[in-house]
Image 1 (cartoon, rainbow, N blue to C red):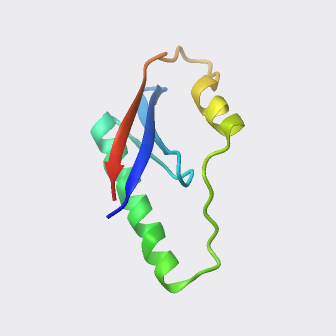
Image 2: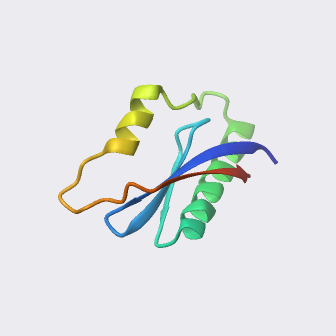
Amino acid sequence: MNFYTVVLRQSAGYWVALCLENGIVGQGVTQDEAIEKLQAAIESLQAINGIEFSVLQSPVAINELHEFLTLETKEPTSEVYEFRAVYA
């Protein structure tokens, strides 16, 4: 089980969880659902990496994080962000 840093952001009625270590995202109606989906996606990636070594992973670049946090939509967005430690 590995430790990951996650940024949560609400967008268009959903919560989006972005893993800073590998760029994987999860989405859900609640924060916990978004994190659960992110954990499942991370675990799937780990399983694939166990059998195929050509899958690339890299941390989220600062410009990508900035875009994630400031993405403009037609709907009003929340300016509430949360950082969490997640194990997967």
